Image 1 (cartoon, rainbow, N blue to C red):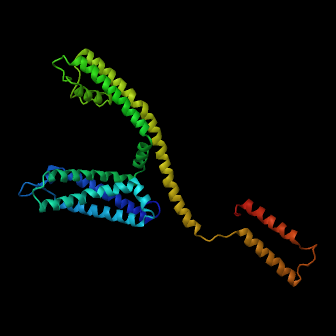
Image 2 (cartoon, rainbow, N blue to C red):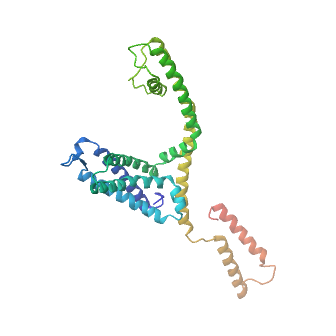
Image 3 (cartoon, one colour):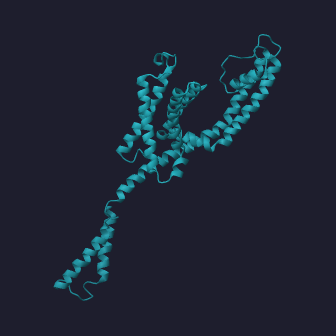
Length: 320
């Protein structure tokens, strides 16, 4: 359930889980199309039968998967500290919450704004896309990068906030007296400075005076510099965590294979050969083929035989 590289069945479970996540996201996107939206006699929106069946099947899979992981977890505290398990729980909560709200709505029609609550709960199903992080090294690395780069992210937001505040006031002071310009308030100028410094440039609001365009040009150039400074640090951290996550996955797969290999019986060829040589020489001595005096065969001769065998084994690459 945790390591797809452990065996074939684990890989099949991972592929099935990934397919169910993608099917759930596709079904949610299709449900937003006008061709698949239906209404009952009271002009209330109802679910398409096919899409509803797909939704229920996906929720059943997600629930069973979470229950199996929870039942097999050796430590519940460590289990809930894993962000991926929290994401699994959050991805199925909207379905059961929507089911409870719909049931309550049928019993009591005087509850206000219940339809908005149902819509918000249905929109929360978008969190299922985060389940892809369980099967994607890149998404896990991105999460680790953001978690360990909050100083750089905060620095980026601080730079942008300062730049937006400065350029919004400057362009407001230049454009406020021009009737053709739409930048007649500082909040509107905030929006213009934001899309300018982030180099988005929607074009819905823009300066019309010459001095305003000059300020806008400086705003764009400063935005490029401000965004580029912390991004390099964040990118380096992402590369480090991405490579680290890949090494962890590779080591985990190798350790699983090593555990299988360690179950095989262990034989030391040198010890077996030495024992058999001792027993063979002892048998020859007992029948009188080899004299029992110290000049013919002694412990040193046996040691010489073992040394010759060890050197031969090392040269042939057969010794351990």
